[in-house]
Length: 263
Image (tube, rainbow, N blue to C red; front, side, top):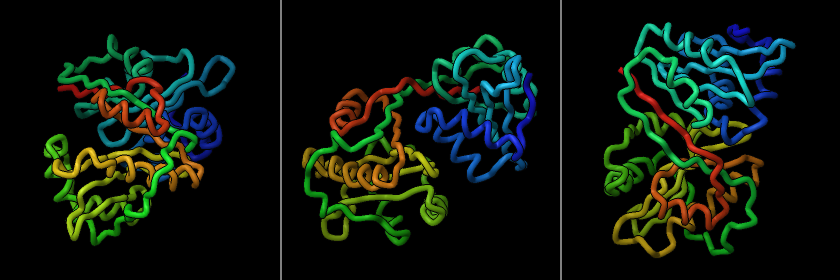
């Protein structure tokens, strides 16, 4: 049976999604921030024959994120998405989202597959001096934007100073960096932080400062701070070379994250 969840269901919902905190980073963060009664967010639950919650489907604006452990009513969740009064997006773990493909009525525009990795302890973090790594304040956002837009793989990112400022002030994002003079030359950030997990994003170094270990230092400082707070870290990557760097400091692949767009 599928029904929309409310605050009264928060306990059973949290028990389900907290079984995999890193994998459910977005769902956990969105529920913590916006709850169950919002114009742009809804959460549905699928209950088995014994009345146990076995799967959820979260809608945040146009994006739908499903999560389940084991079998669930895929057709029922797909029917909810098919009733959307807008063109939806779908994202989530590959083993879950692939089950929706035969049941969605929208024309598939694109499907992107990313490696999904997480780090839960600091045992493999390098023992290096990170004293040169600083924690950014909101006044540093223009320098961060300049750095990211100078790096080819970040040229097309959607970056607004207002959004970054809001996220840093709310605690859902923090930024670490190394500078040379007044120039920010390497950085690593978090996004979608919640009480138990965080996404690592924006790992970048200026071309002329590559191969100096700066990105590793930024990542090490970031990871130590978050892990000491008891948070699991996760990240996406599609570049195998980047994956090697992440794995050297303790990240392990946990699957694939899919992002579908329709028209």
